[in-house]
Image (cartoon, rainbow, N blue to C red; front, side, top):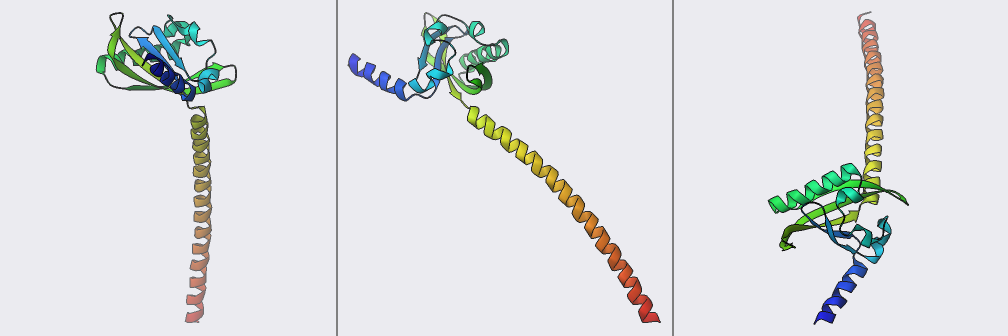
Length: 171
C-alpha cells in the first residue's frame, strides 16, 4: 500500500508541469513538489526552498503578494490567484499562482498549497495581441479619417455638379 502511494506520487511528479509549494500562513515553505518538466523553472535546487520564507527567496514585491495570497486563502478558505514575473537564467518568466488553503494543519499551524504555472507564452501572446489591437485601432482611425475626407470631396463635387445642372436647366 505504501509502495503504491509512493509510485503514484512519483508518476504524478514526472507528469506535473507546475511548481507546488506547501506553505504556512507566514509564507514559510514546508514542502516543494517539482515535476521533471518544471525543474528548469527554479533558480535553486528545490531543497534550498525548504524552511525559508517567501521573502527570503522571492523579490520583495512578489514575496509580499505571495504571502498576502497565502493568508487570504487561509482566512477566507477561497482560492487566491496572482500573477508575477521572475528573472531566471533563461530570462524573464511569468507565473500564475493558485493558492488554496489545505484542510489540515502542520505543526499546529494552518497551511496552504500554492501551485505556480509558467504562463510566459500566454503573457507574450497577450502582449502581442494588445499591440496588434492598438495598431488596428490606429489604422481604423486613419481609414475613417481618409474616408471622411474622400466623402467630403465627393459631397462638394456633387454640390457643384448639382449647381451646374440647375444653372444649365435654367438657361
